[in-house]
Picture 1 (cartoon, rainbow, N blue to C red):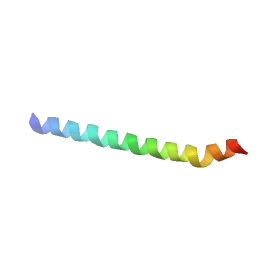
Picture 2 (picture 1 turned 60 degrees about the vertical axis):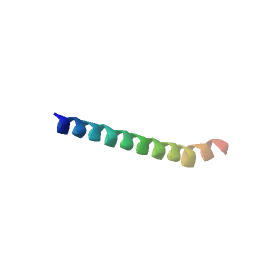
Picture 3 (picture 1 turned 90 degrees about the horizontal axis):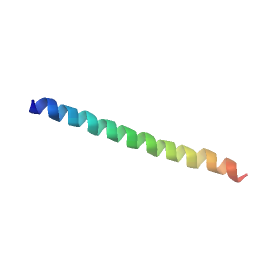
Picture 4 (picture 1 turned 180 degrees about the vertical axis):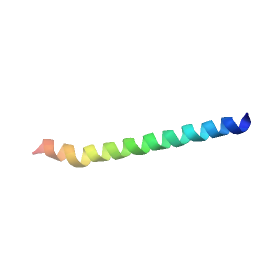
Length: 40
């Protein structure tokens, strides 16, 4: 039971990291590509 639980928590932690990573990439892409285009 404990092993299953730690495995679940590990999956959740990895999912959270992946989501944060994707969000940072998304924010960076918006800053790099969309904001300069709006300024012109």
